Length: 363
Image (cartoon, rainbow, N blue to C red):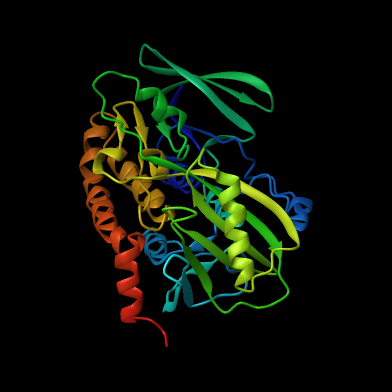
């Protein structure tokens, strides 16, 4: 019998396990293997453990890492480290350059680093896929497969840190009376290309013909990443190819593709899209809908929500959920401010006015 089972060992799940692993008996389950580093995978860039992510650490995430008393090892960072974002508005045929402060990093190494900080007392199950759970006296019975073998474990509390397509959230949403309106789901497609030329900025692309969200270009070592957040079942692949054609006309080269990644991301547009779960089955990070609706930045919310839950568990498991819900009001307010910021970025007319004004741009 475990005290707490955590489903997912991304930044939210790994940070929670790190913070509570010495006080509680914890089971951590993830479908990836974030412990046994495969050098061959890294050399070939065929990273089966990778997450479809641009790998930029935003200032809010940097602040949370500082608040946690951590410092990022230098081998997590990659070249180039840039301080500008080129905004390309294809709808309005406008471009601007803005100063921004992101860390360019290897996302796989970042996730491995967080996992390496987890106490040895935590029972980590990698290459494991969570299947289902059932209520039993005193807690829950969970079923999962590990290295293709089915296993059963008992736990008092289940924590969902399993991302945008959270199975736990989908399951508890079926319970009558629980407010779990799902955020809008997008599919992020990202391709890696060989790149021999240096680009002195990150790039954000806006084009309503492709998506009502945004696309991105990120140089990373000798590669160029092209990604886009697209609506599923809306000619997704065709629109991604259209994006490549339009950017090719601007001078970008996408000839030498290395690999393709994809993942679901959620975009909460209302406060009701946020859900902390229920007592005994609690959600953190993107599974709770904690991700920026304007930029899709989620690492800061993953770290913050896991910290709030760890603090709520410091006084014991009795009443932890009420304490957690109260602490999460801070994230709800933050998400509301991010939502209010969105029209200036995603309404074509407002974005045109903002970019034409030249306010805060680099000339």
